[in-house]
Length: 420
Image (tube, rainbow, N blue to C red; front, side):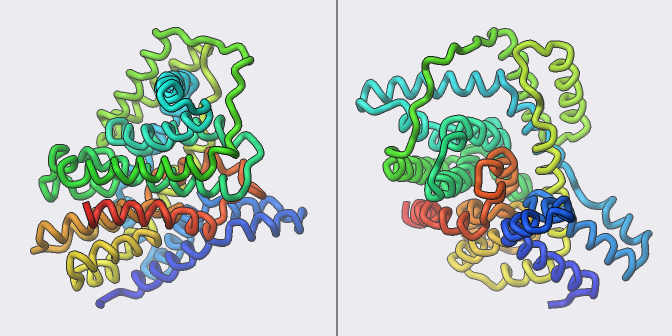
C-alpha cells in the first residue's frame, strides 16, 4: 500500500473519529459530573458533531503539513451534494402536513390489518412503520423515509416510557430496513447511487437483483421485532381531538418534497426549492410546525465531516477490495461499512477496474446489508439519531447497544441476499 504522510494522518484521525462515536455516552456522563465545562462535554457527546469536529482537525493538519493553499484546494474538490440533499430533504419531509399524510395512510392500512388479524392498533402501526416506510425509501429516497419513520416511531414508541431493549431493538431494525429498503430503484440509496451510472444499473436491474430479497428481509425483520415487543407498545390516544389539515396544504408540501427528490443531484436547484419552501411555510404558518432546522443542520454537519475525513481512506480500502473474491467482497464490505459510510465504500469499489458482475453485486449487497450496524454506516442514520436521541438515556445513543441490536436484522438481510 502506497500512501502519503497526509493520507496516513487522515486515517489516524478517521480511526479516532470512529472510536469517538462509541464514546459519546461517556462524554455525556462527564458533562453531568463537570457542570463548569458541561457545554464542551455536551458538544463532544453529540454524535452528529463527531466527524465535523475531526474534519476540522484534519484540515488543520493538512494546513500545517502541506500548507493552507493545499488544504483549501482539498476542501474545494470535495462533493457536498449528499450532505446538502439530506439537510434539505429532512426539513421538507419532517413537516406536520407530510407526517399527517403518512400517518393517515398507515392508520388506514393498520385498520385493515386489525380487521383481518384481530390485533390491536399499536402493533399494527408499529409493524407497518417498520415495513412500509423503508420501502417508500426507494421512491422518496432513504433520508426522507428515515425522517418520516423516525417521527412516526417517536410518537408511537419513543415518547412513552420504554425498556432499553425496545429503544435499541426498534432502532436497529429501523436502520437495517431503511438501508436495504432503498435498493428497489437506482437513485434512492446512497451506496447504489454512487455506482449506478458507472456500472449502468437501471431501476429494473436493481429490482430484479435486490427487490424481492430486500422486501422479504424487511418484512421478516418488522414482523420479528413486532412479535418481540408487541406487549410493550402503548395504544395511541384516540380521545384527543385531531386537527385536520386541508388537502391543498398537504398537496403543496408533497410538491415541494417531489421537487427536492427529483433534483436530488442538482444542489443549486434543490437548495432554491428549499429556500422557497421555507418562505412558503413562513408566509402560511397555519397547519405548520417548527421546521427541524437544528436537527437537519447537525446531520448535514456530520455527513459533511464524513465526506472530508472519508475521502482520504482510499489508499487502504481499495487494495483490500481488489484482492477479494465476490464472496469475500460481500462479507468484507459488510464489515467495512460499519467503519466507513457505505456510499464511500461502493464509490471506491467502482474505481476498481476489471471487476466481474458478481463482484459488483456482492459489493453493493454487503454495503447495504451492513448499513444499520453503526451510525456512520449509512447516510440517513444520523437523521434518525437526531430525531430520536433525546428519548435515550442521557440523551446519547450507545454505539455498542446499537451494534448489538442491529446484528439480528443484519443476519436476516445477509440470508436474504445470499440464499434467495
